[in-house]
Length: 235
Image (cartoon, rainbow, N blue to C red; front, side):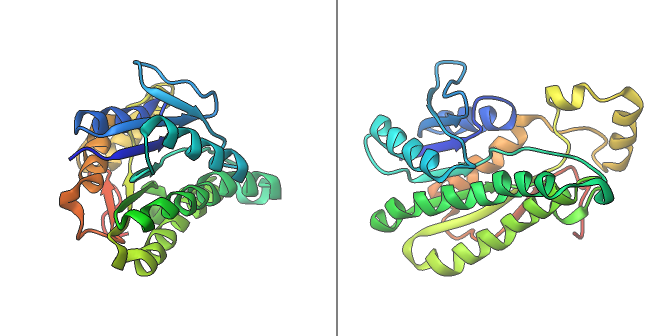
């Protein structure tokens, strides 16, 4: 049975792969991006997850396109702002946390209104292996992505009795334009640390999200699902 889905940051990379996977699974999908545009004929709305009014209006526009409340929300929009701890400014820290963590909270809060009425919902937060593994120069990013775990688990305890699940997907290194731009020796070093010996394809992350969004995943909630080739084992 197809559901109504909204994917933030769904215009490229992992977000685009997720949107396509949900569509392939039979769901009605709208992607949200800062530009309000999306490739490959996907329906899109403009959304800045750092702004509550923008999130609320994006959901209203998406629900108009979809013909009803959003039943699946994938909070994928995120930014980085790498800097060593001693040089990291308050602004460097706050911008990343506001987008990655508070932005996901804004989306989950708005989506929950319709989900509570429907007594059905799937909230999926896209984190990172860095959340629990750590990474030098990424105190802001790691903190924001680790915060998603507490957010999902609190939502699960609050709304779990209403047919609503909240889960976290934690990708490792993904084969995207961003990783392709890294120097070859850096790429080789990263691959050497990954038991699988390779980077993931965006589709491999999207497949896990599609499962968590499905009706079959109704008893999976508050979980952190790593898609990292074994990089973060035990964290």
